[in-house]
Image 1 (cartoon, one colour):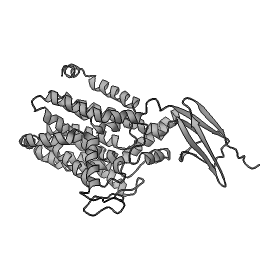
Image 2 (cartoon, helix red, strand yellow):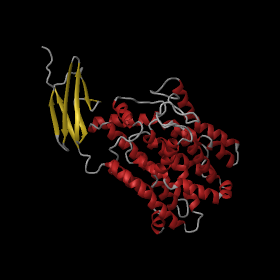
Image 3 (tube, helix red, strand yellow):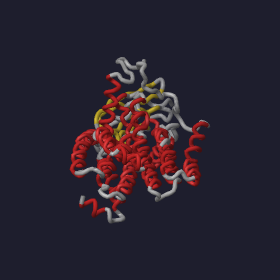
Image 4 (cartoon, rainbow, N blue to C red):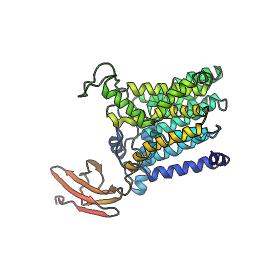
Amino acid sequence: MLFWEKIKNYKATPYLISLAYLLCCWLFRSYELDGGDSDQWMRETEGGIWFRKREMLSFFMFQAVYQITNRLWHWDGRLTINLVSCLAGAIFIFFLYKLCIQLKKGWIPFSLVMTTGMTVLFFGHIETYAQVVAASMVFFYYLIQYLEHRVDARYPAFFYSLAAMFHLQASLLFPVIPVAWYLNGRKKQDIIHWIFGLLPFGLFWLAIRLGIGEGELFNNIYWVTFTPRPDRQEPYWLFSRTHVYEFVWFLYRIAAITTPMLIVLVYKFRKKIVNEPTLTVLLIASIILFVFMFFYYPHKSFADWDLFSLYGLPSTLLVGYLLLRVNRAKEITVILLVISLGVISPIIIKRAKLGQRGTGTIIIKNVPEEAIVLLDDYLKKPEIYYVLQGKHTVRVLNPPKQFKQEIEVIPNQTVVIEYPFKEKE
């Protein structure tokens, strides 16, 4: 593609692409709580949680950004997580471009990956998975550089540690590390470098085991087996209709074109994959995440699509790498891009709620210090900013007195409420 050949000669290109993508993600940021734990993460961010055992760095980022933006501009948990997810997208696209620019016709894997359903995460998705996918992109970037003898093992090892610290889900990718070491010459010096780079994750794991962090670690993790799930009304086991349908839907939602293309291309180039370390590692990573998606039990059903979104990275990257070896790759890629955009564009637009996302302010006067203020059952302060337009319920709890009022917020307007109960003289 002529445009790709022109822009890759400019050093500023990855920064400009990253900035443009950040602005695009922010413009179309999500206003829906459509992740499995979106509602809970918003509450915990506003409630002051700094660390969660499975998502330590993700929550640290949420809280750090919330403390800054709330003090400066009165942002709430929704806007805070929106921003963190969009920033993750900017980092993701930066390293994806840096990787693909090294390839002839690198626009093919670049465009395929950036139009997967996985990238919906970067449009302000209110969850922790945008960060782990972005950190994993950095890991794969340096892992491929390592396999091509451009960096030593400390780089992929460190960014693997970082990805796992954002979310322990990334630890599933650990098997690719010994494989990469083996394929890269089995050097003893590399073992030292790997250990050095993995040390942060080891210390992080020790901190968790010593009790740092809120929430669960291993509990609440279940696998789909041949035994029906007791918490589902419909039959739900490994090959039940419901589970298979959810699994296929996840594949479609995360990367619609990837799995069918992967089956065809892996069969066609099976001998080349075995002989090329980069392709081998990407295939192993894809298989690991594919198996995880099939066997892990999604507690929130379709809302847990983001839990499996990481699968879209190595699998689609592998499809892009293999398409470079196909005749008429350009035409095939264009068709695949049309399909992918047809899947993700309506999702992004629907979540952005363009024309319906105005905000206003609610001020509740004369609220006692000991009283609890709730907006739609979210704990708030008496001054509530960036309230989405529409109808809301305000409650003030100050036992034995309770105050409740239904209000409608109009964009760019302030609603003032007088708390009706006076303090005792």
